Figure 1 (cartoon, rainbow, N blue to C red):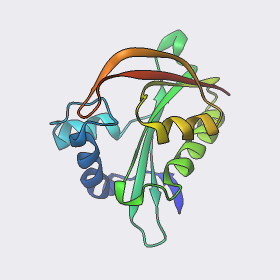
Figure 2: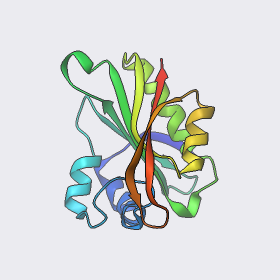
Figure 3: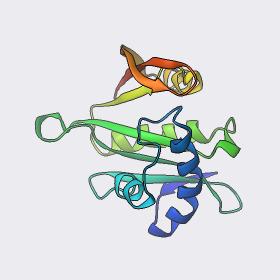
Length: 162
């Protein structure tokens, strides 16, 4: 697997799994009916943001990440990121590869830390992955996410000092 900067042509492989993830409403706090055009505008970032893809040996995009400053101006030294892994490739190290790439790029880009604003507490695999990469849960906002199966659950704010 190779992690690289996304190209415009990668979108045609990102959208099919992204739309499934968002429509499920279990791990991402987006409108479950988001249009492809709106999703692309949010995900395919312009500098200083970046969009990455994880590509398997056959050239298939199996995951993606977006990263950039969490806030502007005096808060722009703290980055943030979002991740989506094709559910068909879950458990194959795609999220870890993307996470490691984001951390390395954030360091190279001069960020002092990374803050995740909304890691759903019931997404235990993601929480465990981020903890294994050195992130800590700063707090959990109670009942901030309405999970389709679990009801109102917390959103973790996670942090990694670089």
